[in-house]
Length: 438
Ligand code: NAP
Image (cartoon, rainbow, N blue to C red; front, side, top):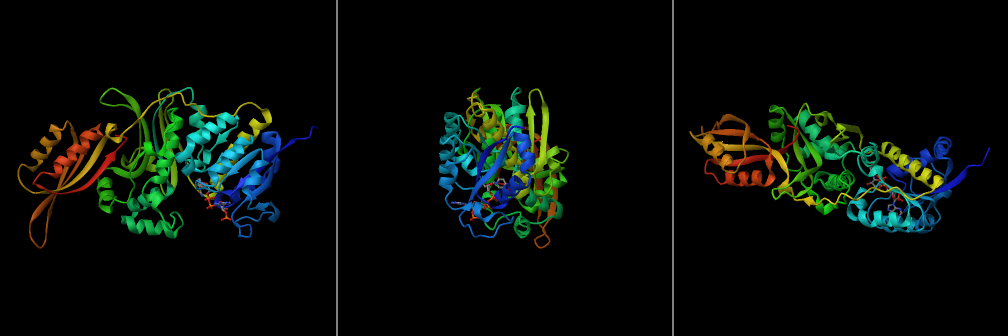
């Protein structure tokens, strides 16, 4: 029997994900060797503090603070430290030294992906990052490989478990945003500083990665228009529910033609009303899912755990086996194609429906005036519902109007809302949310 070749695997980071990757590498060494045709030897683990307590018991001698030396002597480097530096420099050093790299670092990929991809191409090594989008869910490889003979037209993703948990809690219990956030923090679904999640920045980084692979063009974070969930109120959720919708924070990437006939891709993140029967509406709690529409495959949905040490480690190990096989077989790194050359379109060019909540004076002719204003802006109304309220103290009646529009350009919808605000019969615009899947 021929002796298996040994590949040195350097691990950078031993936190939630890294510790589980190290555990699986050691515990499943036999199966991993059989699948790759090489022994995968964990050559070291770089951390900040070698004496820190870990979730997993690991040999003390594997730990080092000298990440630089570790990456220079590795066949595959797994970067799970997060952040921009030193992760970026270490990944570049590893690739320049001929090592394949596996990373879960969506922040770095969204901020400086092009530099990393170019270096991977130049060095002829593989750079893979399945764990960076939707944790355990195999989504990047299906987009890059399985769908490479098709044309993706639209991607809708629930790619942030924290915000999905918060919105789901609000939907199922009627909780206000702040209470649902506090509950998410208590259960460990949200961090002490939840800004990156609730403002949509984490989802925006993933949207840039999904759009880049789906449309064979490199999109950066600044190409993504981003709105988080902090303005979503319990009243919005209740009104959406009553109208048969659920509110989800979606990462959307879709091919569009703007008003000047220019084709491009709209990449955006915002709270979105979805009909309750849409497959993404059934994604509860902290789960993630990505819904893809492709010309030939039609509709596809990928569902699973979007975070957590062990689920995310599964995605990392898949990338590791793929990279190790490539090292064993030789040949150039397999990177994504960037031949699409489609520009990013501003959010104004996107085509969507709006849900608009209005508090209006209860006077004759109000509905007609509002409907006329919509028509003047070229926006047609699909549903208009009115509920009358009487203030117990003043005895003054007001009406709550809920409008769902047909699909129109974002610019026209936004202009309509601005014009509506100027009408003297409008007390306030209580909510403006985009609608998909109708
Ligand atoms: P984490 O728990 O914070 O762990 C980070 C690890 O990196 C720690 O072991 C830390 O060392 C080490 N580290 C940080 N800065 C370092 C430096 N300058 N030098 C040496 N070591 C350093 O992070 P995580 O949750 O495992 O996430 C890791 C990566 O996976 C991130 O890019 C994240 O976005 C991505 N990801 C995470 C999840 C998830 O569910 N957690 C899901 C998808 C993707 P010490 O332990 O000594 O402090």
